Image (cartoon, rainbow, N blue to C red; front, top):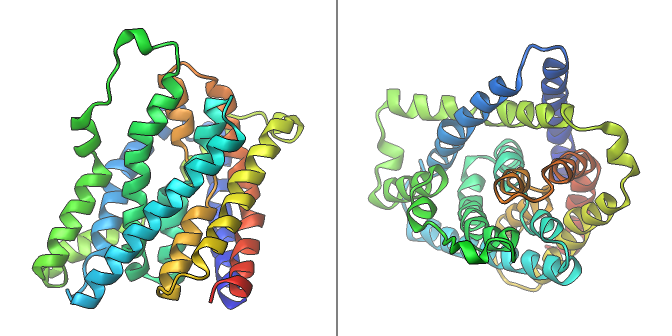
Length: 310
């Protein structure tokens, strides 16, 4: 129950950040171009710094074992989510993508960071890298569909490997395994931790801007959105909890993965839908509604986790 209350406080704080982004966009203080710049800073600097910062700890065989277990658990959770989404939304690629991939980066990292500490972010990194790879491969093919099969569009392996998430995870892992993570000069360490502290505010400001571009009326009058949000925010997290429950792994790993699996639809459903000429407006609504509803569902899931997963 205590962890659910901590998560609730963090989500409410993040909701205020999101409200600030909403207000700034509506009053013209942040433009669409300005929000793209902030998103670029978040993607290329802040989130990578947060990931690297989570590896700034002394190397021990036990910590390396924990990272390996959390990596496998995170990948397992992603595969489970993809399977459930495919079974339910097999005729709608946008819904399948939106339900399959949670916002473990923008929302999961700040929640884990604020409620469980940097070492818990270390346990979430594998899941985030896995989400990134799954979106570049399975997710992209899903949205390409029949329309572009004749165009011979192939997954760009270079882009898959050379992107801020994968690179920062690799750098962090090297620092951790080499023992240099905890021995960085104070200036470098201060820079990384300082940039990492911007993660929650900037991520939520951007989501607030996304929300401001969406018709609020349509968020409450589109039945398909509720079905998707129910799957993304309730069904998938509950099944993930039930699968994790009997597995004899550290409770903090379980909690970290559940937080990642309980997060709303990732913003990439909108990005990829635009790139592959799917319904971009509907995809934005998926992100907006599931993000708003997660303010209620995530504390409930974490409270339920205390009853199910020990």
